Image (cartoon, rainbow, N blue to C red; front, side, top):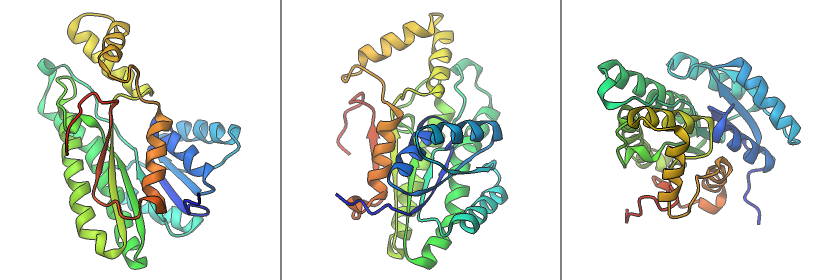
Length: 262
């Protein structure tokens, strides 16, 4: 089945690690022209070497997307090098976990900067360009914490909740311009980031991280964490012509941890 992604220019923010890197590999596998962005040049170099070892390649760009000017420069650079951006996958930024009794107002500000504004800045930088071409796809990798509060992830969950609203709201505004915007809410996924969550909960409960992981997986109906490539597969689907009438949706991928009717 042809999903029509060959030669599509795909920008993946946060593409040097975790779900973002899995997205880079998945889109490269569809013969897309992939660009990945990250704040750390070292991580970008490592990611590119990994992709090359898998038989793929990607252009790499260093950018701090909490800065709107750097986000705009990133988009300009990608389009100058590869052509017009067809697909934007946002996977950059993650708010730090904190025990509730250690929370300070700055933690809430930091969470919004790390997660919410990185996505807002990158979307703002591509939307008018996509609108001028009357075509474009944006997929935001958000997080289930925006719907299901976690005591050690409250600032990050608040940023995710705001991002869900922005995703669905912008989808409604830009649909008439040929742009499809959707989101994915992964539950805990096997990446480096999940370890921070387990460590914070372990500290709060005074048990080991291994015990937290064991307890968590036992509570999941599916019995395991998500794999990053499973999230990437859905991002590819949402970006393909198979999802041509899916707009403004937030797809939860949490292994039935919180079964709900939306």
